[in-house]
Structure formats: C-alpha cells, structure tokens
Amino acid sequence: MGYKVHYIKHIAGMLNLEGMDTKDVAEMICCPPDSSMGDFALPCFKLAKTMHKSPAAIAEEIASNFKCDHVVKGVAAVNGYVNFTIDREWLAHQVLNMVVSYGSCFGASDEGYGRTICIDYSSVNIAKPFHIGHLSSTVIGGALYRIYDFLGYKVVGINHLGDYGTQFGKLICAYKHWGVKEEVEKGGIHAVNDLYVRFNSEATEEMEAEAREYFRLIESGDKEANELFDWFKSMTLEYVDRIYARLHVRFDSYNGERFYSDKMQPVIDRLEEKGLLKESDGAKIVDLEEYGMSPCLILRSDGASLYATRDLAAALYRKNTYDFEKCLYVVAYQQNLHFQQIFKVLELMGYDWAKDMVHVAFGMVSMEDGSMSTRQGRVVWLEDVIDKCVEKAYDVINEKNPNLISKKWTAEQVGVGAVIFGALYNARIKDITFSYDKVLSFEGETSVYVQYTCARANSVLEKGDAHELYEKFAKKVKKTGKPVWLNPGDFPWVTADSLEPSEYELIKLLGDFSDVVKEAAEKYEPSCVARYAVELSQKFNKFYIDCKILSAPEKTTRMFRLTLTWSVHRVLKNAMYLLGIEVPDEM
Image (cartoon, rainbow, N blue to C red; front, side, top):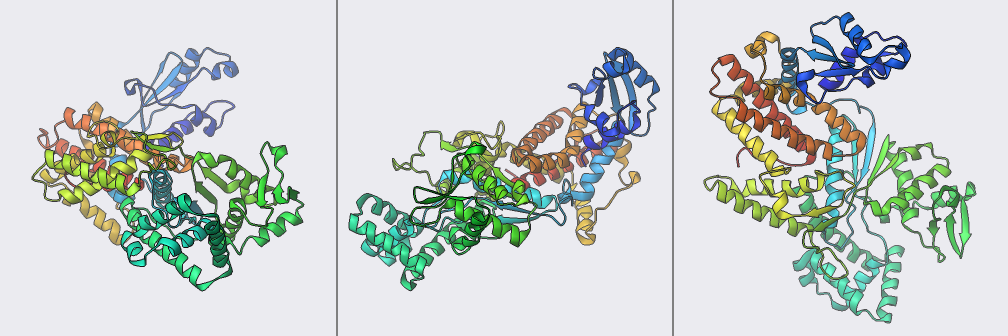
C-alpha cells in the first residue's frame, strides 16, 4: 500500500462524521496543490447540506475536535478545508525503511496470488518481418506481463501467431517457382518475404490456383507442404526471438491460429444449440444488430472459418486451460469492433466469464518522415529502427563520455530503451510519431533522461561508498526471502533535522510507487510507470542541485541523503524493469 492510501485511511479512521463511514470520508480526502498548505485536506463543502452549517464552520469544528497522533502532526481549518500535516520525519523513516528493506521487491505485492492473467500480444505473422507497427503491441504486452507478475499474478504470455491462411499457399507456390534454398537460408526472413511480395505482383491465374491447392495440401497434412511451412515458421521464430531478446519480452505460448483449426467445431455446435447461428447469403453468422453491431461472420459460404471462429475457439481453450481471471488482448484500436463482437458472442453463448475478456487497444505508430505505407513499399522494419537508435546512442555517448569502457553495451541499453520508452510514455490509445532525436534526447520525457539520472545517482553512491551498506540488506532479503525491517536506531539519520522541501517531495513520491504499479495494472496503462519514472527523475535532479549530499555538513544529514539517493536509484531501476528497460551504471 502506498503512503497516500495508507495515510488517507488513517486520517479517515480518526474522523467521526455523522452519517458517513470511513470509506466515504477517505474518498473525500485529497492532496492540496501546495504542500505548504498541508499534506492532506478534507473539503467540507459537500457536508454543508447535511450538517446545515457553512463549510468554514464545519472545518473549524472538525479541526478543533481532531486529536493528533504519531502520524498526524498538525491540523488547521482554512477556508472550508481541514488541512492535515503529517509527521514528515516519521514518513521519511517509513518510506526509506521500506525501500531499503524490500529493495528490488519494493512496490511488489502478492495481491494476485492464486490468480491467472492471460495476455495475448505481439502476434507476429509467419514469414513476415517485424515492422514498426508491431512495436506497441509487443512492448505494451511485455510491460503488462511484468507488472502483473510484480503484483503476484500467474501470467501467461501468448503470442497468437498468424500462421493460417491462403497466403502460405502463395508463399509455397512462390518458393517452388523462384526460390533457391541456399539463397533463402542466407537471406532469412527477408528473402522469404521478398518471395511473397513477388508472388503478389507477378502471379498468374494458374499460379493463384496452384497456391490455393498448396494451402489445401497444408490443411490435409501433406508432408512436403508442411515441411516447407515449418521451415518458414522456424526461420520466422528464430528471427523474432532475436528481437524479443533485445526488447526483453517473453512468451509462454506460441499457439497461433493454426493450433485452433481442429478446435472450432465445439464452438459451432454451441452456437447451433443456442440458436445463435443464422444463414446469410450462404454464410453462417451471429446476428448482433440489436446490440448495435454488424453480424459476426462465423463461416464463409464455402464453409471456411474466419478470424472470429478461431478467436472464439482460442478463448474457450484459454479459459479451460488456464482458468484465467482476465484475458487481455493487446491489439490496435482498429480491431475494436472485432473484439466487441467476440465478447458479445461469448456472452450470448452463456459464458459468464465473457466479462473478463479485455481489449487493450492502442494507437498507431508512424515515422516522422511518414514512411509507413506497406502498399507503397515504404515499410519500416523494427529491427532497423532499433539498430539505428543504438548507433545514434553510441555516437552521443562517444561524444559525451569518450573514455567510457562499456560504450557498445551502454549504447545497446540506451538505444533499445529509447525505442521501448517512446512507445510506452504516452497513453496507449494515442497515435505515436516516432522521432529518433526526440526519444534519444538527454532532456525531457525520455528513457535517456531517466537512465542518465540513474547514472548520476549511482556515481554519488560510489563516491560515498554507500552501495555496500545498502546491498547487505538486499543480500539478507535474498537469503531469507523476507524483507529486513530496520529499527529506528539502525540508521541515525531518521532523527535528522527538518527536511528540505526537495527532500520531502522525493520521499512522498517514493512512497507512491506501489500505488502507481497498481494503477498501471488496473488501467492496463504502462504509461503510468513511465511517467512516474520521469517525475521521480525530475525531483531527484532538483534535490541534487538544492542539497549537498557528499559534502553535507553533518554526518547524519550525509547518511540521510545518501540513503535517499540509494532509494531513488533503486525505485527507478524497479520502474524501468517493469517497462523492460535496462539501466546502465554510467553514461
């Protein structure tokens, strides 16, 4: 539980307002825009009607009857508000104690214990390279995987491969006509894609018919056709696994469309039993007109299945296999109608767990120069974007710190981090225009800024010989599996003099981290964590300028500020881990 929630509940429990329970009171308490006014405030305007008094009079009455304790240090009535000031040194001890004790687990919880979350994301197409449009689904899904895992859930990451359809018959046909095995092996997935592109531009009617026959052979289990398909699939997975490794993304299942080809009949049978399947121009549909949607097409007039059929089968398989609490689909907003139809059909089929299906929609990604038109041949491959970011990062690092020993590895961390952060910083539903200069800027709202802040904090800690002091607690945690709760006497700095404003702002923000992680999970928004990391970096850099750390006049003050620096460094690393971004020790 974050400090805000904890203290709001504490204050609400100390207030005895007629006709209101503690939860109602807690919902009224807010944080003043200026912390000099207090740490929390209770606006009394809504109480005027029921208490038949002016807000100012109510505030005065509440303040005069409130008894301060070890948490709440002061209370005052100001213009219809009751402002509460908490004991700041006590908060400092509580927050920093928890960060030092929990370390890399600070912000984590076991709230998800015994519950499963399925996340369908990335969903690459066999025989096609990754383009920049796959970025958002991949990194949003990867971040949500880590966030839910951090909260104690069992997470199942699913890569629903695009491995079914007539395009594979076309690919085999193209390979048979123009492919040379040695050249394809050498060129990899891009050579395979070139064959497919050539087919679409040069294929004759005879070749189109031949392609349909090859797809039929794949479905019927023909050995040669399936060996070729499996070869294309293995090349694809080998290629995408390299990119996934760089983006720090993992999956637990690669069951794609083809996996569900023999699992669709129970879906069709259930639809028939429920009287939901209707015929329309020879096709089989579920009529959703009364729900404001177009029909959900289940079977084409030739009896072939469609995306909806396979997605319904996949949903049933996942529920039966994983018994998920929620099943998330991280797919672009263009598929809004598709998922609305799927979820509604599942509901009409009588599955009450249809309410647990969630479409985590996101906006589109384009390059700054507009180069994203597949039809015009201006596709931007994701691997090329990553490589270019790493190259540019290397040039910047080489210029700023030419003596850095690990320039290449640091450039990889910075470049890859810039790509990921660029897709995660804004609310996921917003369209993104990717700019190399913007994502690699050392100033502003970028991963580079956060990484540079971590490097700055790390430099302070190394000069202050502080790492060893705090890492010993981390070792105890790792050894025992439990946090090491420190007593007030363990660190003399807990009785330091009054906090500087920039110190207090940092402590409050550190205390918010667990609530930020929970908010990210509840809203399916990794941007909550990304924005938090930037804000924490900004506040640390202000503290770094405002307060002497290594040259602090008092030893207790120096220890306090080193501990605050270590805590910021630790929490920033935790936040960046959740986003899938590594933090270099120096830059």
